[in-house]
Image (tube, rainbow, N blue to C red; front, side, top):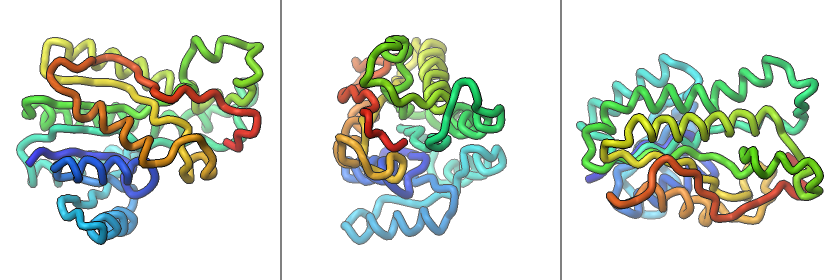
Length: 245
């Protein structure tokens, strides 16, 4: 049985990704910052008839937690086939390029960039043992420098410079990781799940978690001829004038 690790898998898009991967026959390790929340998510999917899932305590901002998760999963499987770096935070509604504090930037980057790099590096050896390893980094259209350089676009009036900067950095990490792994079976991509109705967005958006999950899992299931080092957004979503986040 193939195996996958999904970070931030106890709710929202991460939960849906875990469910879809389990339905595709993967044994899914569901990373959660608290084991209680992770186990509750597993129980929810068990009730839906899926038994090939397991909660793993994993706080991506804590190196000791990442090391412990790697050790725990390494004891259970000789290889990891898929890593979905889904855990992320927005940094809150009040963000300003002029006034955001270093602490705001650090908090968001700790999860959205440093956490992704930490988890990826920790599990790279297990991924290397898979014949077709896949890494999916959850990004956003709001990270696009091209889109947001259009300073007069009224559809892009809502801007979140701390969050956006972190995801733009994540995109650059993604393409450089793909570059370093270009002569291997790895496929490494950044994918925008769409403007999705979850806690993250105040339950506003144009996509359901089911739609978002399918967009991400598509790139976790790429064949050997699939793309790598790319950014994908199947639903371009400029932040609308009523965007609450």
